[in-house]
Image (cartoon, rainbow, N blue to C red; front, side, top):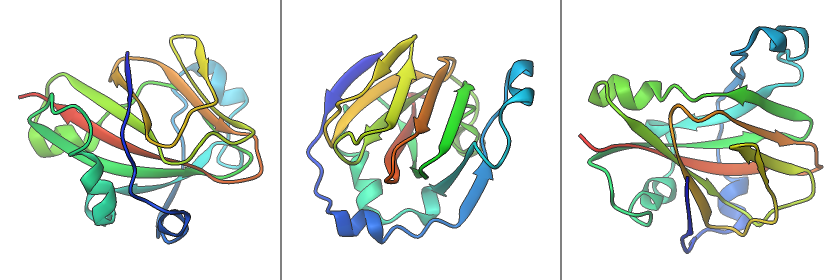
Length: 162
């Protein structure tokens, strides 16, 4: 895992104006999850590459340029929702650019707020600043949740070298 920070040229209005159209239940990749996670407690809003505003696409120019191909997305985890322990599949990137090793840059779009949570490698992340990012491999298991009172916004730049 690699961490860094980029300058964000976005406002609260930019986040409020995001038009999410895809609301869906998150992965349940372990059998134990079938007993605890349902669409009512593990669904998120997501906006994919072609539906993302230009400012989300521009984030790809601000992260380390260690890739040949990329796609972008944005996520809104509403209060009370979780993204259970999972590995990302990176379907859109692989569908567009073919198979191979892929990574994700997770970019926090606002300063950390009470109840917003991200965990990877068994390590919780809180107290982030807007523009902080974490790069991790497709095979890394991770968790996100919003047990706060405000939406949790993030952007994802999913990358592949060749």
